[in-house]
Image 1 (cartoon, helix red, strand yellow):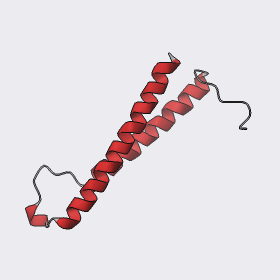
Image 2 (cartoon, rainbow, N blue to C red; image 1 turned 90 degrees about the vertical axis):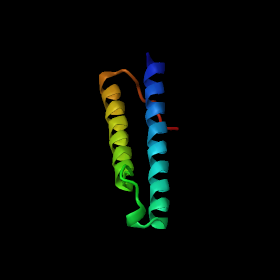
Image 3 (cartoon, one colour; image 1 turned 180 degrees about the vertical axis):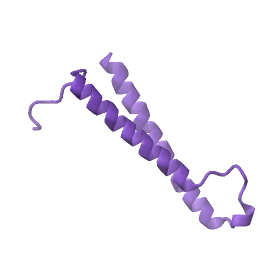
Image 4 (tube, rainbow, N blue to C red; image 1 turned 30 degrees about the horizontal axis):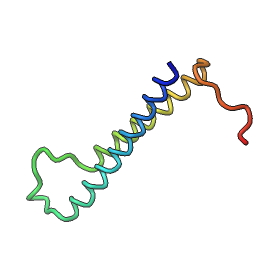
Length: 79
């Protein structure tokens, strides 16, 4: 069961990185294009950054919930 939890967290981190990359791509592309040439279904950079922030917050909430419920345990000593 812990393996599934770690897999979910790994997928969340992967989606976070993908959304960060898509936001970077939109930022670079929007500086090259004029506003008149933009396609109607283009999403702004803030859409992907907002999704990244939401997924990051969700990952932190999952970690805190797992720690408080005793599902995962932190190491006793940091070194």
